[in-house]
Length: 515
Image (cartoon, rainbow, N blue to C red; front, side):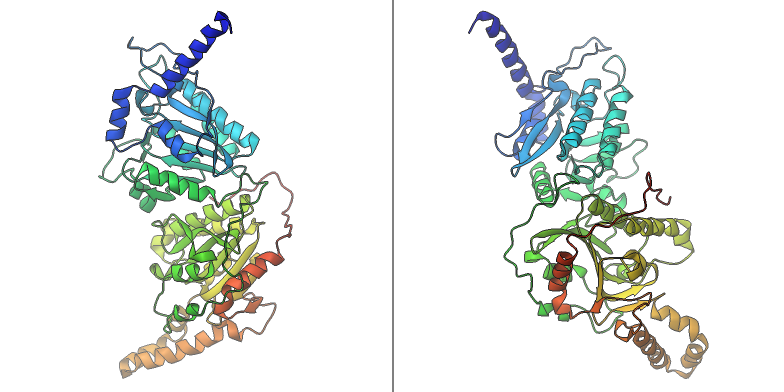
């Protein structure tokens, strides 16, 4: 080997040393003191050992600093490339907070934008780990170049529904760049260090943090207590997802009998319909091995969403939770439902709805915040679903909730009901109050209100019972009532029957979702 090659190898080695050194020992120590891993440490833990191949390591901040101070910018503060996670190919990037506080420089923006495009073109998931002070302003000659940030946003949006897009928020993310994690399919936030904020005054101690983004803003899907846990959650989540919309989700290994009958299901639902129960108890009993991977757990808790497997096949589960606000539908649960079912449809993951809801909340306060338009989004989205869809009515299926959770004329592939199922345009309680108002007023005067009220209520509930449905063409038609103990086997068999279905929609350029 000649001296000519030696010189180039020396340059290559110098570049690698600079990149490994990141922002320097002092900045790395500060990162660790903050309870955070460095960008390369995060990649090392996320990816299979030895599988990461970096791209873009030569890139540096190419603009002269306005203040004349030259700053280290190895890899332009973004470590990125391709790797494997549990032997599956992914594209990933990690913003390096040790390099100018992870600020998004001009070349960094173009690097990330190109990586997203590569992932989309190669049909593999894109995963980003964000730890950034936002756009790099006031240091370089000019800002990040909003063209670069716009390219990130456009590429991330264009490949929506093409490949899974997962973001981990492991530090700050502010300014216009805050829209990037919000565009992802799933956002994992480190409770200790994650902070997402567009701008403006901060008026509370929890503003922008993980709990704020989960419980109030609804933008967080999973909360972790450390970088390590965030990475583990990401690995678990990815195991439910396909590589792209053209592939199936991985089959999950299970020895759980698909024909298993679960007697414990008979003991969960209370005898008194005014009492509640926790829907998680039912979900855990019907899915493989009792393993349910819940999303947005603390946002709109009256609607439960998440992934599980049924006989080894990944499914998305949406269930009303009577234990929280009676399982109502309102604006937050509508948004939560809408986003999840659209993701499932994009990636051909079956939808299983477990229904027990008293419908959309009525009243002036809810009308003022747009309950109709939020519900309309659910109606619109469900009407466009072409993935496999199974609905099981457990107890109440009232009003608009009946429609958006897959009533017969919304064309789920199958709709079943437990014998306790009830269909009604509104809750029997409201009907009793509306129709028998005079009789109830007199009963109150006579001192036998509860007796009269319950007599009318029981008559109506019997009328609304699925077991009294005799008309096959009814609006409230089901395919078959089922023994609750057979819920698991019924869902699994139904999914198998429609495995090869091909559902088509009217030919059009695109659809327009309600506001």
